[in-house]
Amino acid sequence: MAAPDLKERLKAPLRRLVNAWRARRRSAELKAEQPHTSKAEIVAGLRAMGIVPGDTVMLHSSLKSLGYVEGGPTAVLEAIHEAISPGGTLVVPTYYLPGGTIYATCQMQGYVFDPREHGSNLGALPAAFLKMPGIRRSIHPTHSVSALGPLAQDIVGQHHLAPSVCGRLSPWERCVHHKAKILGLGISMGPVTFYHLIEDLMDERFPLPVRMKETFRMPCKDWDGRDIQVPVRPLDPAFQGQRIDHKSRGDLRQHFYDRYQAAGILHAGQVGPARSWWIRADEFHRHLEQDAMHGLTIYTTPEELSRLRA
Image 1 (tube, rainbow, N blue to C red):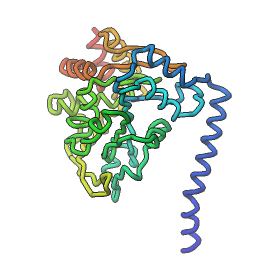
Image 2: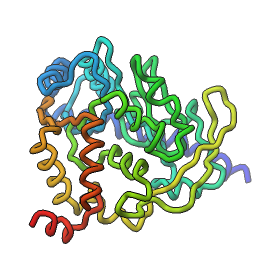
Image 3: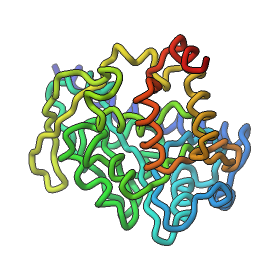
Image 4: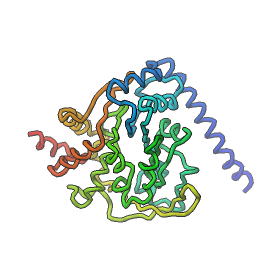
């Protein structure tokens, strides 16, 4: 048994070395091939599109859309924080989904989320945000959210008490309360978790049964190491293929973008090379609810969308 055990012990440090080498190589490639963006350009771009000191901002982003940024993801986060300072609060999804999906994670045996140990598997920006001094992180086994600023604890502090992932007491509901700006930095209207707030708040009134019936009581540790349980109702995988973030749904992403820009709630801009946008959370919520009541959701099929446009 000694040889196999030794092999297993060597796997983790070897994997870390390989990942570090790949990261260095990717950084060198970006520096050589991509446009360069400075912190000052990011701050200027955000301010020009209406992100101002005192704002609460929930960030959804694509790091690669900015090209090569000297200082990497930390510099990007510092630039956004500078743009909303003084007095602003930056909110960043720092989800940890070891199963890949909510449902698969809920089915994992022995999984206990611990905010003191678990990082984020959303990418470099969320991982870097978790290392910044002063952040507050919500206790949630699949959709942990972190924040930095005077409203941080109010936004993330009750997430483990929320009866659903994105509904009442969740960071998304608190962002509506504080009239936060949902910022899409270099992304389309697809990968935006805020959409799920309306599903959880409307519950049975939502046009489609997108949440599964079963509620999982997921074990977690709080910041003091105490054992708690957090309720999670997964999204039904049956609807995933028609959702706005599916690669085939460019039609729906563009429809929402055009619709909300025409309504005057989507504010577009340019941050370095990254096409970006923002929508105030309370206005976003109101329009999503109105649209859902008229049959338009992020699950609307191409055929249904054609009929709604007619």
